[in-house]
Amino acid sequence: MVRELANGLMKVFPTLDDTKRRIALATYRLLARGVPASPAEIAADASAPVEEVRRILGDWIGVYTDAEDRVIGFWGLAIPNMKHRFEVDGVQLHTWCAWDTLFLPELLGKTARVESACETSGRPVRLTVSPAAVESTEPAAPFVSFVTPDASRFERDIIKTFCHYVHFFRSRDDGETWVAKTPGTFLLTLDEAVELARLKNQAQFGRQEQDRE
Picture 1: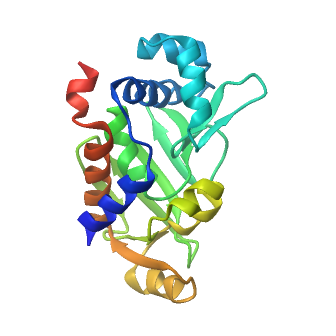
Picture 2 (picture 1 turned 180 degrees about the horizontal axis):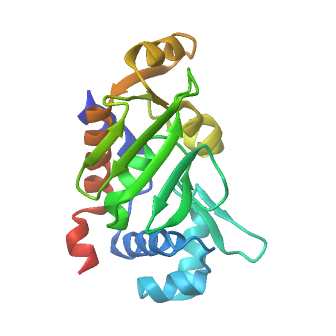
Picture 3 (picture 1 turned 45 degrees about the vertical axis):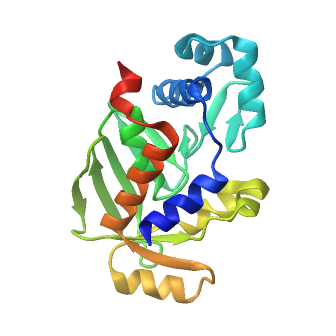
């Protein structure tokens, strides 16, 4: 099931050539500072022409900018306050959904401290996620809700139509209670969600060790 989900995601996520991959990773790295990222900064970090960066960012869905055209939210990572807190190197960031917290550390090459809330009980869910693995969780075995990948969901509004259905739950019972009332959703174990994150990163970005060298 996890591999089928990963294949479905890659059908709706943007295909990245080498230039686009560098631009995406540069955008993530700069956002992780906790300040908006300008196209000029992204271009310098990605070793790409600034006009090409502007064009590519403008073509992609899931890119949010401020009044000065600086990126403040990009493919799961956000500076503005959201439900899922994501702390990297002491910088307080946020993510759009629970699953974002599992794939972003590998792309950033940094360990993240995650704090969210169970969508059913409202009680806290905390994780420490390194680039290689989930190092710790509270509770011991949280669950993650998910929704079948659908290009029309992404194109309309990825946050409202996809991310708002992807939450943490403190227990299987909490997750099943919510899924039963939310058509089109299903439950993943944390291990399944982590494996899905790994497959997605590998398919979209390749081996991060090579990209960071």
